[in-house]
Image (tube, rainbow, N blue to C red):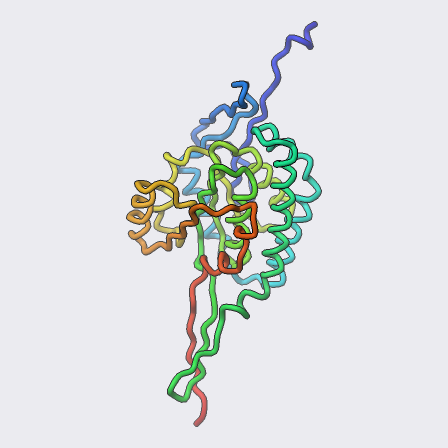
Length: 289
């Protein structure tokens, strides 16, 4: 009788900063409820200080990650896909818990695995596509190559628990950037479980940092932080778009808006999404005597 009357203990999903799983520094959380209004989990309500801590971790990791060979970055993304593949049932169950059907959830997780493999394959190829030898009217060789922009802040789509987040993170990190991502506010559980996959996948600490919390509270920080080089977000809401553009202009931060993309389709994968977070470096080399 006692067992039948006991209350279930809801799992508390933590944030992921610098390869660790701390609770938010403020101690705040919000209860995540299902359609029956029952609490299914407690989710950390990330704060501005959590975001600043994550940016510090991302900046510290960025130089080393950018120096890593394209082959190594591709191998690590492939390892993430392997680890996610091994935990498909867990992710399917979490997505179902948040309202997806079993079929929808399984399809989303399988596409997320395939998307990671897709970008792993591009790791040592995108430079060949987007770099060039430029014709110049002088005794020089002129080369243009891509370099990572640095630290990228990411606001994941709110209508996707896993595939949207993966589709933002993968092209950013395969190109040598580090990132701080804000998970979906309404479907946050898979993001924290994905952080556990990253933690077991040889991804160096600080390369990917994942926060949970409220978009209205944190978007300003994601757009205005002076040590962030680019912000990638869904671009939804005219008022919010204007605010992001204005705040990003303070340090000439690149704003990458991706509205109305179906992340479950082929539209959600492209080498051009890698190029979005790259800078073009042009080098002149003299020839002749």
